[in-house]
Amino acid sequence: MSFLSDFESRIGSVFGAAPQGYTEPFSFKKLAKRAAREMENETYEIDGVDTAPALYTVLVSSADDSLMRPLYEQITYETSSFVTAQAQKKGYAFVGSPLVRFMVDPSLKSGKFAVFAENVDAGTLARLREEERAFLAGNSSAGGAAAQVHPRGRRQEMPAPAPEPMPVAAPAADGLDVIPLDVIEPAPIASASGSTPMPVPLGEPAPVVVPGEGPGSVPVPQTQRRSVPLVDPRRGVGDVAAPAAASAEQPIATCLLIDRQSGQTYTATAPATVIGRERSQAGVVLRDPNVSRRHAELSFDGRDWHITDLGSTNGTLVNDVDVRECVLRNGDLITLGLMNLEFRENPR
Image (cartoon, rainbow, N blue to C red; front, top):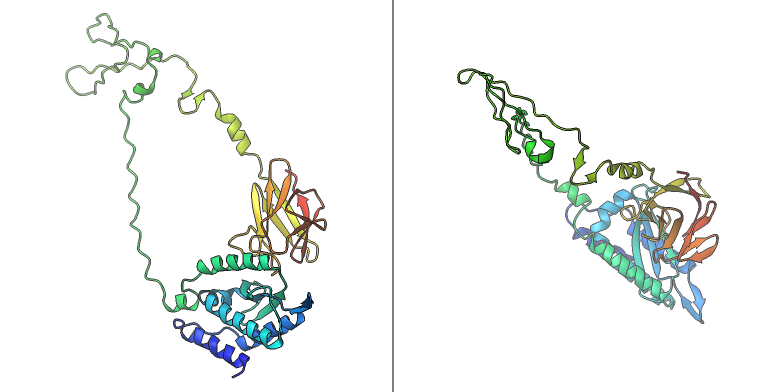
């Protein structure tokens, strides 16, 4: 049996052992042929040794990615084994064991794919392998077609919220316990017999007399208060919250990244925005297999925008200079992977 037929049989076993509903979204035989062709195109002589590329990126559609994601660990292992066998047959060497990774390209339709081979150094390959291992570990649970075949149970019905109680009129004494004692004036008590009013001791509210109870209802006098500034013991005296409210109304700083080739515009927001190829990890998502999942970060310090490389595979260039971190100015050209992005700061 040839390498190609053996590979096709092994991939069929991977999908055959998966839960019901998992089917091959495209021909893995064609995928293997394209990977072999990419390996041939990117093999170079290094120090007298024919060195084949060790990094293989397969672009797939969003739908196919959702279906295959729980099987990626087995699929990538079988694909890597096929590439290794092909290289040994040709007498090629690698800088390390070949790494195969799958990425989503939203522009692809279901059943379509693309394969790219890249030459990277051993250190970069090891770092990408750890990144891919962590990525696969977080996506090992069944999903895709299996999730459709076994639908979740009916959602539990939430009990209807209890009606809010009607407000009850507050007694006349409510609220006096939070007012400083020196603010309350002595309140006279009216007497039906016209006797001399007696002062009420400080801190004790006047008794409430309910009309209709007992002989001769007595009116309740109004409490007299001085005019004093409002005090919020939680925040201090006066309008101390005004500056904070004013600062909260300031607009959030943003900047633009304009693709020189397509004209597409991306917006980054302060205080920081990550640029990468994974939608779940980046605020600005670039459709380029040469861009790392977390490639670079744009940050705003209140005055200037900065760009910082996050340990990407192919590095970050500003005006054709490889940088780890630098301040950006209007018109600067940022190169990430194969994309050239013009930086523009939005006026606030």
